[in-house]
Length: 177
Image (cartoon, rainbow, N blue to C red; front, side, top):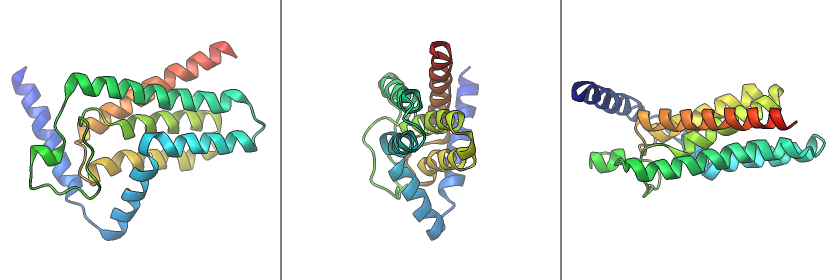
């Protein structure tokens, strides 16, 4: 079991170095933008609110994405206390993140959880916007590794939490409607 854990850790670190090593100034600006608008689910909550205003003021169209984003963020925050994983720039002091460094645990990624939850619920409610929402979610997720503040396993775990939370919220909303 230790050998498997070590192999996963080594693969995670190698994947981090590969993504973090891809530096291109225009891409860095895009990644910074998506990480900023992805903070605390701002992009998803804002999209849900604006869409709610312009599509008939149906309460579930606002509450479902907000509940999924808030629920996934809450689960991530609790999980961070259980794992307390060091961020890449703490693990290796030669890593210079491209954004202001977070102080919380690295595992799992809150940005990734809220991005997955927001993109999934909003795509389910507004399928015509899915071709924009899904890539935006993926950019938020990838930005965390590219900018040097998360390992790939952190963002994968965050995304899994977000998808699971969104699935539960969507299923609950379907039962209640």
